[in-house]
Length: 319
Image (cartoon, rainbow, N blue to C red):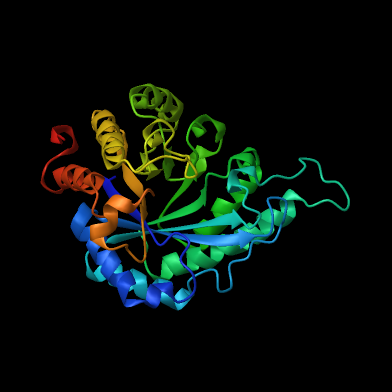
């Protein structure tokens, strides 16, 4: 498997936003400024609460199919490979990892079978687009921790996706959860979210390697990143962390992550989090505390690291 120099694009984009002229310019700048070779189009369906069984993927809260297909075509025109990642967010503000139902069906209560039926319809809709546009990879879910114990439902979902999509399939588990997924044999690639604290990467990589080794499958971090705030490198998954702007701390996180992972030839890349559809003015980068790296020191760290994989082998890559 080639090394994935990836970036996530378009998270939370709503109807019409991919049609804006700024969107294509942003994607072009993402490739130019980070030296990435893959774009992950992350789509955000919704459900009312973590206990709702209806996954809503048609409406103004998502880009239209036409917009997505046109953006995929544009990505191809600038020599980017494509990964499609349909995921879901509860509207009650509770993180999708907590979507959960009784393991034994109870009358008048929401059921796993109902939720998976709706979620599978959602995945198949975008798997068909992935097949039509020849996407290189399809990610069937992201950080859905409580659902992961439903092994048979996930296996069935993946098999149904394979009936319409012939490319590579992965599932993006959450940080620290790599050992919770018992059905890694069903996917082509193992992936997780790399939000590990600065200074702890070697420990976590040792742990992950032991977990995935028996499956003998490629691995990459489908997400990884850090806000540009003081304290964020110690808890990079906390998007709500209250901290002052700290561009160097964000850059230090990336240096530490790349330094640790470059020594592990089983880590086959990243889908970094995240690049916005509409960018802030570059001159205002020092006022942004989010995960964005545009115009920040972290952008240069990523560019330098990713460029190492354009002309040299993984073993020779250096920071």
